[in-house]
Length: 79
Image (cartoon, rainbow, N blue to C red; front, top):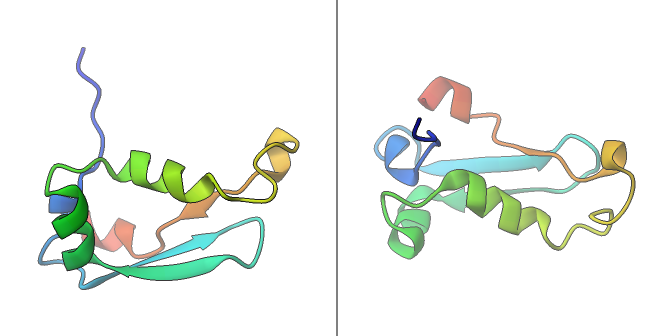
């Protein structure tokens, strides 16, 4: 069975800015959807992008329950 994941094209025209925040710490930010699509393409894997964002988390090597947990609070209304 093929794996399914969200791609940046899924939010094109629905969001101008994608907000991202961590549920474990105060890290948060926002990214232009147009710039994300320009960089990663419409078929760019959003899960891989989030995983890359978590790569510089100071807690990335800590306990599993303390690790960075990034979410996109606007995604549920756009997908």
